[in-house]
Image 1 (cartoon, helix red, strand yellow):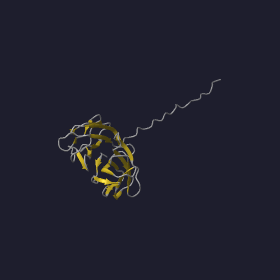
Image 2 (cartoon, helix red, strand yellow):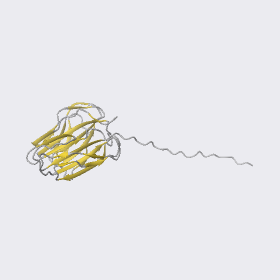
Image 3 (spheres, helix red, strand yellow):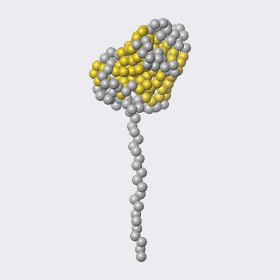
Image 4 (cartoon, one colour):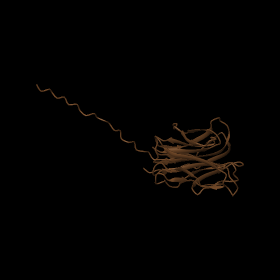
Length: 227
């Protein structure tokens, strides 16, 4: 089944909170939740109902932002996801969760990438695709922000306080071929210099497991001696 984005909750943000929760959403059996934490520090994720296993897949060098995944073994209705700082401290930031179908549950992430820039409007190559039919997702933070950033890709953006803005950016379509440079557009507010820090991941389909080859030694044949 090809990777697709099911109905997902909208990004939420805060100017000062100790936790941030999504609106209620549904997740079908076998879905993969992909969360983008943009809270300025190490995050702890949780969810309503039976606890899912959240795994951090990529993080900025300063740990301000990260991308997480959690497989959904059984269908969920009206669930929420919540992020908090590992220290319990208040934070300024944003939080988005995507409900992905058709993705691998055991190994959902292929290539990753990261970068920084002071250019206002950039379109860097996030990574080179490692499999066919994967989907790209990025998180970007601008600490010189004068307003809300935008993107030519599918973005969910937030801005809070002074010089604090970011967005999660999803490619609108799957990448058809292996070895394709996947780009993401990050456009800061107005035309002033920016201070971008970004990370990107490749969400991949479940990959087939090569069959195990079993070697069977030739059958020994015993021949009676002739007398």
